[in-house]
Picture 1 (cartoon, rainbow, N blue to C red):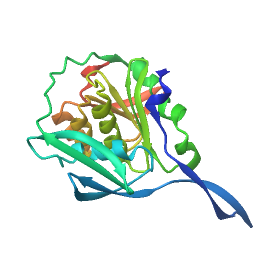
Picture 2: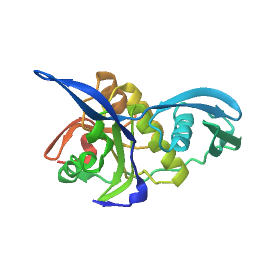
Picture 3: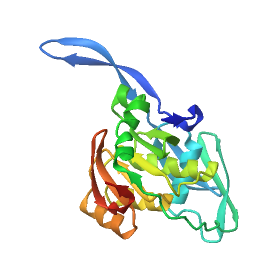
Picture 4: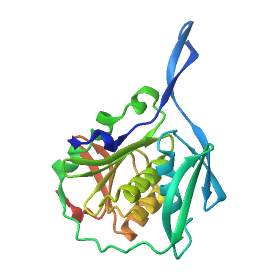
Length: 238
């Protein structure tokens, strides 16, 4: 799988002491995912507090504002910075330019299975702490961007921030995801503009219904040798 190290964004872990008991007590240390709280300001007004992993907070702030519809109609993103322990997003007059998507080129079942071990091959914090979710945008044999966070919704917001700030074309991208797929995840995937979601976990009934409505291909239970398609099978050559 082709990847640029600059496109891989990992979460921090911290070694913490604990007492392990199994037929006796022993002092040990465990890698724990780092969690931080960051006030988020939009055009000078505090609109939320981000609870997340500590890396790329500016990217998360942009993705959150876009995903949650915080940027008013008639405005568009102007910039983002981190200052005084807070994230500051600014907007300016204007609207985002609509881009017409080309038809999605179907992928083979073999190619989809090749993504089944991708997240495990990339993750550092997940294996160390078992405390983060993961997501990657892939196209063919290339990883466009990979990110981790303590929250599955944060992973999707981070991806949206990277897509916005790095002008990533997602028209042919597959989103490989670690978390379960309820309605809220499909809403964010739809806002991201991705038409193919492949998750290691399973969906909910509302997640499947919304994927059908938004014409998102939904493959779940993804493994190196198998998957289950719940919506829009036409994008997979079986």
